[in-house]
Length: 317
Image 1: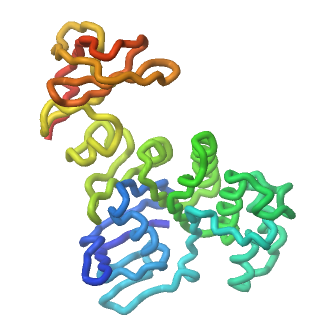
Image 2: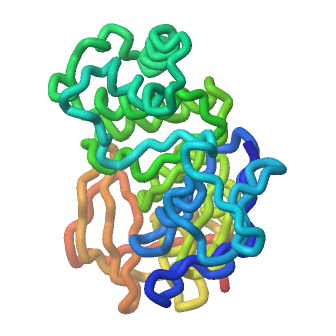
Image 3: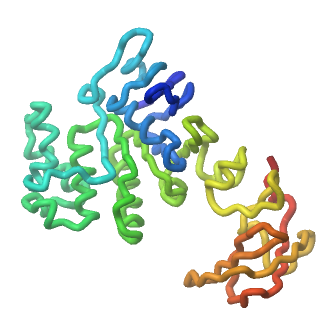
């Protein structure tokens, strides 16, 4: 399903949180809305779902208008054929896994072949043998899978994810990133994923939309966003950035701690060291600016370190 948001604005008590937003999400694309808390990403997701009503603008699903303030159109959530995966799982504790997944179908009175459809959804998320268990008998990752199954059992055209991994520990988050990508790819559905975690966005997305104060800062493929940030905000929010001044930065991996011909040398002092397993992360004082570099060996705090920078890799604004 293709989603087209045209000139969308949203205000709460006369405070504008979304400002004349124009956003297109391609069919079967995995798009991530990325930004800090309060940037409007969850509000955008909820407007797509119909859980929030825009103040102005239009929303189209393919060629069908589902919202227009001028035309007085506002298709209710249950008729938009959207699946929604929430942050807090939102499972009924008194219902079994099977009944939690079946709940949406029963609420819509769409009970034809319900047994087959629920079992198919549970098998898709690898929970077929857990159908008779209750949420309290499941791990956090398994509970989130039940949430996925509930979202897909209605065979939606689009699945919306509202920071679904934030309640999981680090290992489970890594596993569930793979699961979400596998699931959406196998289903062939459009996916819109909301997060403030840049690692989630970079590792999962076909396209990232970086949001700042209710407006789009930049959008594009993860590689493009990372390698060619268009604004200082994007450069600082995505990945690690070392700043030469307020208008010029470089990524740590484009520089070297070993001397290289043609690279410009900068003198720094070690402020801090963290052991990361395969290497060490160095925090360097570069004339009052803090840089981050990785090194295969430990440096003592206060050590002098030369950083060699490929000036062709410096990004300027």
